[in-house]
Length: 138
Image: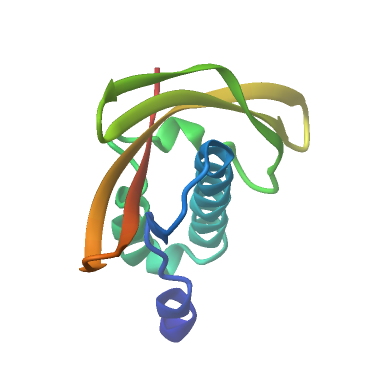
């Protein structure tokens, strides 16, 4: 089981070249899905809680433990709401909303998404943009 946890290790960093505006939502959606996969793995294998908690921290700027919706939840319909806010040349913030389905109810929830970009030049002509995606509560 320890190997399973190690294989599930993911990074909240994404590497892209030729970034278009819609890719920010795409990257964020993928990372939010990865976050919730880790939450489910932690529920299914509590013996690996400390290892998984370390991985979960790479996705958040604060504790999102309140997003732990109990067992057997699913997340769907992830989409950006509102406008993106540009904080600086390298930081953008926007909200992702999604539908949570549990055994007893269906409801909407959301997280604040912060994307930090950094250009990394591999050679004088090619820049690769490294994006860090972090989620936080409102």
